[in-house]
Image (cartoon, rainbow, N blue to C red; front, side, top):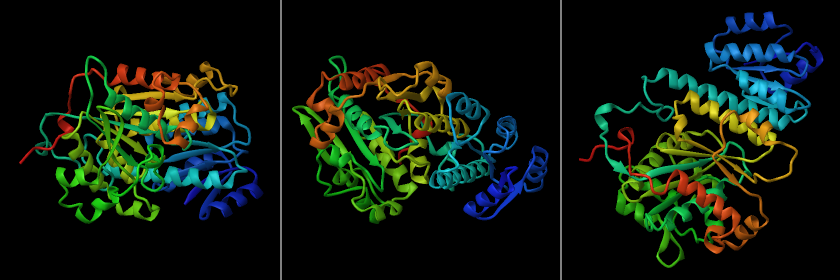
Length: 408
C-alpha cells in the first residue's frame, strides 16, 4: 500500500486510483502517525500540493531511521534547486504528476529498491551479495590476482552506455606502449535489448542464453565456445559474450549463471568489461557485486543527472566502494542550459571523464565500426583513451580476496 500526502482531496483520489491500494493523509502529523502505524509500508508519495519543506524533512529522517521507506516527490515544474534539495535529503525520484507512466515506473523502481534493502538487512553483515542468495562465507575465498572487472552502468537509457562500454573494451585491448596488448572480454548484460552485436557488426551465433542448459557445470572451455571474436585490427581483439537474441530469453539467465560467467572470465582475461541494462535487477546486481570498477554514465540533462544521483545513493546503501566509482559525463559539451556548477550541485561527486558530443557517434554505430577502431584520433576516442589510461591501463593486477573463489 502507498501513503499519499496531498491536501487536495480530488487530486489525492485521482492518485489513489492510478496507484491502486493507497491511504491518503493531509498533514505532516497525519503522515508520521500513519507511517508509525504501518511499519511495513515502503512508499510515500508527496503530491504537488504537499509542502516541499515537509517532503525534504521527512525524507531526511527516513534516510537515517528507515532507509527502506521510499519517498517520491511530484512537482509539475522541476528546477535544479528543487532537484538538488530533494535528492540531497533522500527523495528517490522527482516526477511530473502529469506523466502517469513515469509515476508508475518510479513507484515500481522505489518498491524494488525497498525490497532489496529489506533483503540486505536480513542477510548476515558484510559486503552486499546478490538479493535472495546467501552471503559469501570467508572460507570460500582466497586472495589471488585476476582480471579487473569494469561495469558500465546508467540508470537511464539513452545515455551512451553501450557506446562507452564497447569503445572502452577496444581501447583496453589496444593497450599502451608500456603495457602492450591486453586480453579483454566484453559481456553484454543488457539481456533483453543488448546492442553490442549491432554496434560491432557481430553475428550472434552463440549468446549467453546458450549457457542456460549447462549453467550448473559450465567451465572455461564451455565459456570459450560461447564467445564471438571481434578483431578491429591486426594484433588487437576482444572476445564478446553477446546478449540473447530474443528478449524472452532474458529471464532464463539467472543471477547464479552471471556470477559464474564473470568468475570464469576473470581467470581468462586482463579486463572484463560489462555493458548493463538500465535497471537494478537481480542479474544486474550479480554483476555489480562482482565488479572492481564502476563506470557510471550520465548526460547533462536533469532526468539523467537525477538518476545518477539515485544510483550513487543506491550504491551507498549496498556498500559498493566509493573509490571504485568513476562518473563519466557523456555529450559533455552539449548546450542544454545547464552549467557545470549546476550539474555538480545535483550529483555532488566529482566527474572523472568528459566525453564530447559528436554526430560521428551514431554514424559509427550505424556502420558497426566504433570510433576507437575507425577513428582512434577522434575527440571521443581520445576522451575514452584518457579515461582508460588514467583509471585502468598500467595499473597493477588487483588482489580482491572477496572476488576469488578457492581452487579445488
